[in-house]
Image (tube, rainbow, N blue to C red; front, side, top):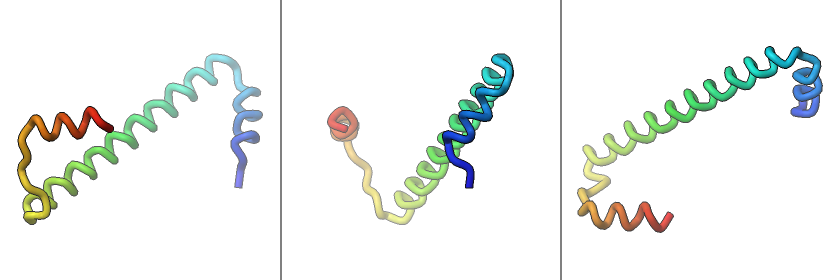
Length: 69
């Protein structure tokens, strides 16, 4: 198992341009991973709604819950 410190040491050995490219790749992968999580959560919510596990709620109630969190 490689540690974060080992990764950082290795990255520091790369030229600056490659470090920038690596950062861009990592950010894009994180964004894609988060999009996949959101899509999965949305599909689960839709399925729960269709199975009657969730009930429609007034928009005001939803907004109030979102602003508290």
